[in-house]
Image (cartoon, rainbow, N blue to C red; front, side, top):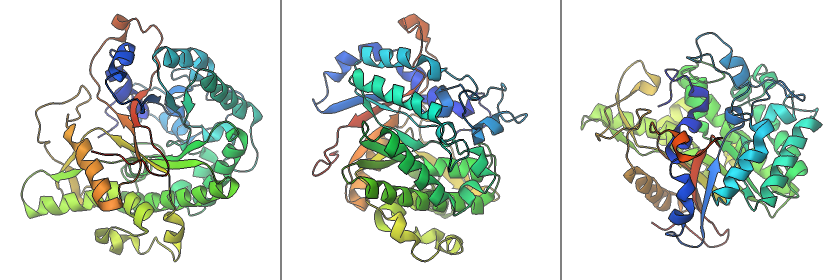
Length: 415
């Protein structure tokens, strides 16, 4: 789990993917030759991790800008102000991607860069950056796959309630349509959210991530439900604008297993699975809530919410790193604590190495949710490798994604 023990907690994915993959990226051409011809390799980033230029060209503040400046939030005091300077070095980064033979780039758009107040007024200089980025990717033969929201709510909207407000659905839909109108002539694949459960738990439950709301169980469930609602609203708004888009969303999906055979630990696993995996999946795929959470969420859900939440997508992005091993622990969120993983292998980040969980989760998607088309949008492990030894003089600080190319009408992920 991410925590504020790390000086790079705001760039968790950069730590996980980038350092693990840099030593092998130069050999991707060889590695890719061992996969099917329709296998797609790519990289993935988020705006707050890499762009920098936090106060340039009319960009408004995001929740991460505000959070990172609060004393004690980030161990080494780092902020998104410079990050990897992708805002200025995007051409170098595209050249790295092209040189590595990559076929796709999933990046997030900084909402506050293009709409500084979150709604209404748009920032031409902000949009111009993404024009340049998309055009550069296409020229290099790399497929742009923008994600509309990767945890960086505009601070102006956070002050109006953020994800704890039902108005967030209308805010996201307005922004989504603005992005499509600006970039949709060149981009046909869009992801709505990145890891709603992570953002809800650590940003709105424990307060370890931006926006730093320690709202407990209620905060988590409100943020989860309103992200689901906003996602469905945005999906419908985009479909109304154009019917031939490839639309999806990205979830952090992890099998949840009990630490011991005790009934209390089994029940804890059921609760955490419901929060982490099922609120998003059941809502999106079935238009329902996990049964164990119905009593807690009844006061949040309004009539007809699931008519919006259950909106078809073309592809499901799945981020996977390890299983969750949990135990019953009163006083924690949902009375769930982190148990001792059933493995003796760990990454430098302290996360268990459990590749078998990827297969387990994909089989759950096949069995429980009709085998939706899936892209593995994040996967990897962090180890203490030295990129300088591999002639990577300027780093594309990003996560690896290993994607099955999907065919909208018929292709499924087969395991």
